[in-house]
Length: 398
Image (tube, rainbow, N blue to C red; front, side, top):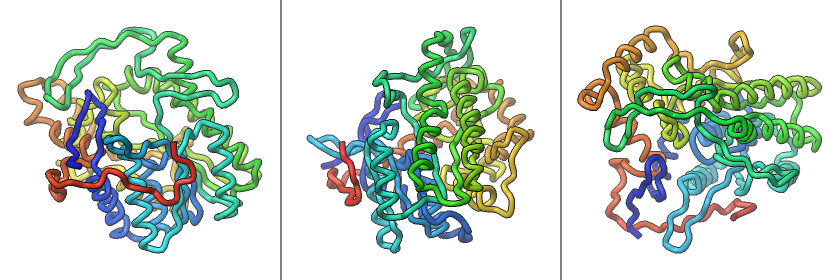
């Protein structure tokens, strides 16, 4: 079938297998072009099919020669409907890993569930024995509590007071004002349940109790802080409260891992184009301005560059540098004073008339479609492609 992008707002409902494969190969080639990382050997990535999780898996495999198990919830192609981008990404990754002689297996299912945790532990015992790195990079709008069955749904809202600021429709480049009403107490609680650290703790407890964490095991989860421009909707909003819970979980996991001589970190990463960031009002406009500034200063990084730097210069460096709250900061280039001053100056000027000249809104738009395998000049999108692509290692397909 000939596959074209179809989208509703910040959601693309189709994905292109050849484009996704090309995107994965680009990331692999970047890691292979860098110095090897003296890093992990047996890795579990929870949330492994897109974004930072996928980039972590690629870096571990092609930077450290690690064996990896990836957990995610993606949909295969069926009934003239394409698979999700994460499905195609994983198929391409596993093929490349296999061709290079690396072990890579995947489990497709609800990572919040007890069943998927048990299946993952069984696979670790069967094939790896133990893992020495656990990456927690799960992004989901909802979570079913594995014990009670209650369904929690997250929201992206300010807390306490309404929030008004500029935002942009990245498809049309129209800059408008937006006002978002504050979250209710229940919405705050639900967002923390979905996006906080509770499930990360459940994973680490289950892995340690099963004896599949190696001596000195490391675990890392990903977060974001951002500038004052976005604080009301992010750092001080419902997402920020969930990330506070994630940080508190890191402290508890750190204590838990002391018996193994292990470590637990939060890595604060750079603002990037993801499905999640595309959905947050104000943030796409900030990112389009940030990209303009960082590209001009030759500081721009994507997911794969960030994850390579995390592995090579933080997690597996001579010593892991952290801030005063114990967090790894690979948002350091984004948060440089000169970068933020330049972004703020542009923020105060930007409108619908000048956005294309003073921002990188086109780069944001292209990167959004890249996430789904589209807008790569190397791919002929008029050609027919096979939408049904298999992932041979999949243990659970739903």
